Image (cartoon, rainbow, N blue to C red; front, side, top):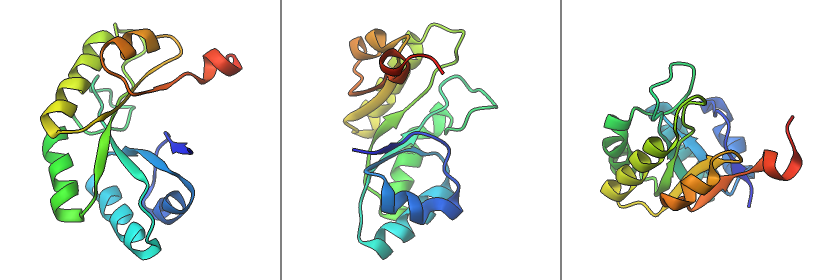
Length: 144
């Protein structure tokens, strides 16, 4: 499976739908609308995850936690998107546990089964808190 875990611009939605099996960075209405149009056009339906900015970091993409459940519902009802789960990247200098717990709580509220959280340095905590997908590139390939 190919996962898109980086920022997605709406003008790249066609390429993302054509190429990826999972798009983990749905984070705003404009992206949801563009993905919906392209998925119908291409008759291709990658799994979609909403990115949540659990640390309220201005430099990071993602929907605010307090808006996440409503955004998932709008994606479903207004854009006809089947959202599979949530993704987060906690702040680098904070304990990731509370961020992972928050994401798990939001996923449960929204009825979502996929939790993409945890990277090479904190994947054990993420798994303990319910992660179904972890991103462990550095642990496998080494630091950049």
